[in-house]
Structure formats: C-alpha cells, structure tokens
Length: 311
Image (cartoon, rainbow, N blue to C red; front, side, top):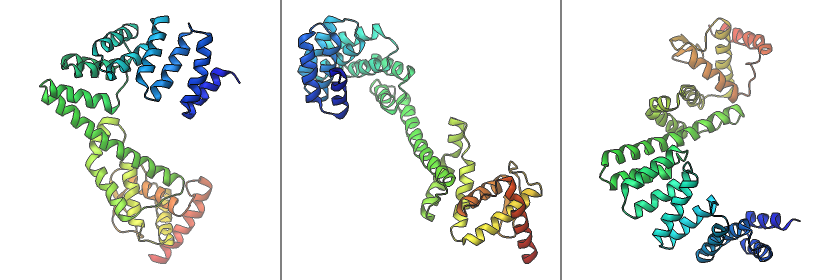
C-alpha cells in the first residue's frame, strides 16, 4: 500500500503514533516536502504536542509561505502557547491570502477579544458569520463581545435570537422524527409526549413560520389526531378513517381551513385540512392504504355500511 495512504488511514483511525512514524520516515528522505511537514504537524497537534506541532508547521511555512492551512494552525498554536504577537502575524497573513475564510476570522476575533480589542473582535466575528460560519459558537462569542464592548442591547438581542433558534432546532428535530415515524408506520407516543410537543408548537408556531416559511400546522394536527386516537381501538380508528374517506368522495377539500365538517364517529367540528391530517394519521395507525385510488371504492362502501348502521 502507498505509505501516504497508509498514514492517512492511521490518522482516520486515530493511531497518530503510527502515522507520525510514516511521515517522519518520508520526511527524512524528502526534507523540502512542505505537505509532509504539515501532515506531521497535524499528528502532533492531535496528540496535543503543541511545541513539536509548531516546529513542523513552521517548517511547512518556511518551505511554502502561502500554505493557508499551516498559517491558520500555526496562528492557533501560537495563541495556545501564549505568543500573541506571532499568532496575530500568522493569522493576518492567512487572512491576506484568503479574506473569505471564516475560520481565520473566528481565530482572529478570539485573539482580539483576548487582547481586549472588542471593536476588532466584533468586526472579525461578524465577518466569520457573514462568510458562512453561522453556527452557534461564533455568534455566541459575538454576542459576548458586544456586551464586553458596552453594546448590551446588541448582545442581548443576539443571545435571545440564539435561544429562540435553539428552541426551534429542538422542535424541528421532534417534528421531523414525528413525520418520519408516521411515514414509516412507526407511530408511538404517550399522552405526556404528545402534550409536550403540542405545547411547544403552540409557543413557537408563529415564530417558526416567520423564520423558515414552513408551516407546522400539518404535524400539529396529526399530533392532535394521535392524541384523540390513543384511547381508541384500531377498529374505531378505522371507522373514523372510513367516514373521512366518504366525506372526501363527497367533495371535501383537504385544503379547506374553514371548520365546517362534523363526523358521526368522532365528536367536534373539523376543517377539511384537519380531516386530511386525521385521515393520514389513521392510515398510519391502522396500516391503511386508502390513499391509493383503487382502494377508494372499498373504503367508500365500508363507510356507507357504517353510516347505515349508525344513522
């Protein structure tokens, strides 16, 4: 096997000592190969051997002064080792090579924050986010930099935004999982779980739609159906399902949001949209397949039988 590939495989497996041995052997025969010094530096860095990692990255930069990744790693190591000025020089040079690198801006922002230069820190955190690093960490740090700089309102608004998004992210995960479970005929849930999801949806529904232009009403209505179906037998759910199919054959529009419809098999008034959600949920719970056109006639006949018996 190619020794470079073997060394990379060792790195992926976390066996940095084995990878280091290969890179050292290769580097002794190719002392001017900057990539070998860089890879060796990564191995030492992974093992937190910062001084040796620094030596390898310095060798790499000496051979190739435009090696962006080596300059970034070197700047971070200088910072870790307390050499702020050399860290600043290395990161500034990296920034000159690629001013759109969000990682460089994040490292520069943290360095400036450490140096109590919050104006510069805010500038680089903002650029890191603008260049695509919209993850929580740099945005959280930006909020704190605003606060340290006396811009308490900006800091507060950004932190509040992060809190809102954290709640939305958790809700998004729960919504996706709920929908996946339904699609896969794997609907499970307790009353407490459904109540919790519904309360969270009520709290965040408007904000969720405004931010993502994604309506959660569909999933919310499916959860309401689940909540009502928990106390019913499969046969009762099938009867409700068949009556909704009957109404659909009589012209109920599942896009209709007006609460016009009543079911003999289930108390309350429903919109066409909600009935569509109830139909879908009942199909998952009973492993039904009446959404397929060739099954509609059979479902229609069953619904008629039910209405004749209970009217």
